[in-house]
Length: 253
Image (tube, rainbow, N blue to C red; front, side):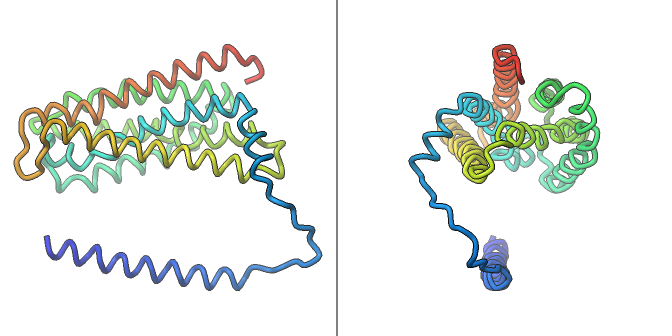
């Protein structure tokens, strides 16, 4: 445990060094064009415009639910692999398969989106991820090898999850030339809020079932797969329903 704490300490020092180095290096490269006219940043005007953009706000609500669904498994995957699958040494391999398959199949989802549209392809990928990821609830230490397949196919559908939201946002705000950064900032904030809420909720639930990493009780073993698989799949289904409802109500999408 002491070695692990030391590793985190040294990693933090490296990160701090890289942060300051990047700031000083890149700021020196920024050119100041004195002939450019500075545009006054009007918070009130920008927020008024953003919050009057109904389609954008509806998508923000959908993205928040989706962010919760994606972040919940991430917040408890260590507990899931350690205590449910009982193979902590495989965690790195599971994550590698997951993200590698997502990267490989992103080109596939791009082509699908060009043929049937971004919302339709995203909805299909979400349904596929639900059908795949729901099986994580039934996997345990006796059949943990099946989780390799779950990681692979979940990663396949993750490719669309990574591509479609920013592509949809770009399509919505492409005419807002002077306010694009504000829209993207709000979208990023929504994603971070989803991650924060997912971490908070998962830890609260584990606290309610008296989770102890050193002595895992039966309630915890039942709660972890629910947090990891069942709730995210339910949230993903809600995302599909919201996307379908929005597409039916907005004919230009």
